[in-house]
Length: 234
Length: 280
Image (tube, rainbow over all chains, first blue to last red; front, side):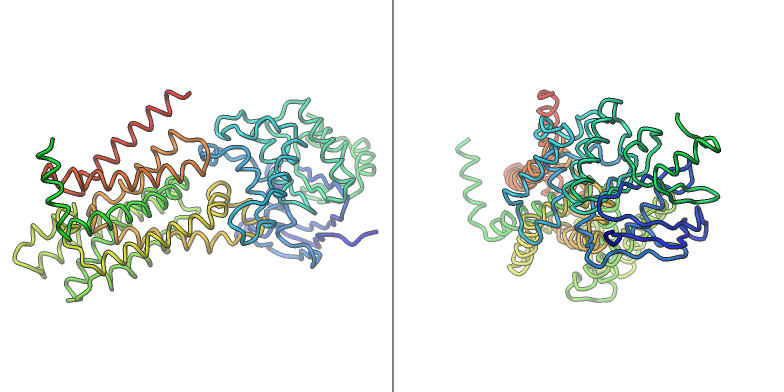
């Protein structure tokens, strides 16, 4: 068993003094697919933001593998209409995921450009490369942003609602792609409302709510069948 | 036509015209580049407030008897830029009222101070110059030209070297933070550069018109072009050409320099908007 990339112990998350969720414990290692589930306001996005250091934890501990650098993490924030007006081609957006590779060099190398093209291709968006981002549809934008996260996340992908805006076919493709990426050794931590679709691919489930739990996906599905799935398969 | 050219040749022989023709486009270039980041981050109004702060701090410096008013005005404006940027986050409504109070307060107190401690016998003329930059660009010293040149060069090189980093921050700061970019430090740097450019641009177009140099080239470029690179290039070009055209026309037609430069920028913005519309 490989050591985990990120491990949380007795973690409390929230904003200011308002605790949204407490007692969270889990670990995600190379090749794992952890699916974060929970109702609205359960703290799913807050958990991702806390793990990424975008907001402070309220209590508990987050330990990450010392060799895991920020440049190894690809984050897909929840889609945000604010950036939709920025003039940029899809290629420019994806390339911006290669910052950590670029370092101080003022331009992107051929290898980085190839990486960006490959990332677009993995999400079936290679033909969008030259298109202006602001003229793409919601689903197309989402695929471009996923490709950017893939460029940035050589070891860990942190995805907030990755299937939002995708049609069912594209969502199924996305889950296949994520499974491939995990087999290549990447860890995937994703928040989803898409049940059971999002679970089919997960190795572990992290449930947020009054009683947080963390279990292998198979055990969680047995439990869900037993007690009835809260806010479940929509 | 030949008479116009003759007049132009005559004016171009004057050192003060030459200096204006060098410094003006350089400052406009820096303003256009920074304007792109301000417009995209929806901070255009902060640029406007900062120009009012620059006016107020110039008046304070005058009242305190500073020989070089930039020595006080520059640090004060930079300080405000950094403070505004950090207070603006996450407090949209409070930030909005704070900006309005700061803007109008700086203007009112600045005008008051200029009247109580008049720097010359012609207070109305001084105020008009500070607000609309009517003649100050024609009274630049060689050190002013060097300062503008050095600053614009620095801004242009900065954007050349770090355009990808700037794009990342403008586009989605949370993604950049998660990927290890020190977004706060970059934002502070952009705020400081913007404040410096605004203070220097006061000499070109005056307090009330600075925002035009920041916004029109950026908006025009964004309407016509679809990649970030093209937008940066186009905005720089509009800034430089607008300033050149404005200064030349104002010499020939005897119009105020600042408003003529702004009129040229507005025209360019309209043309680019039309061109962008036709492409669709």
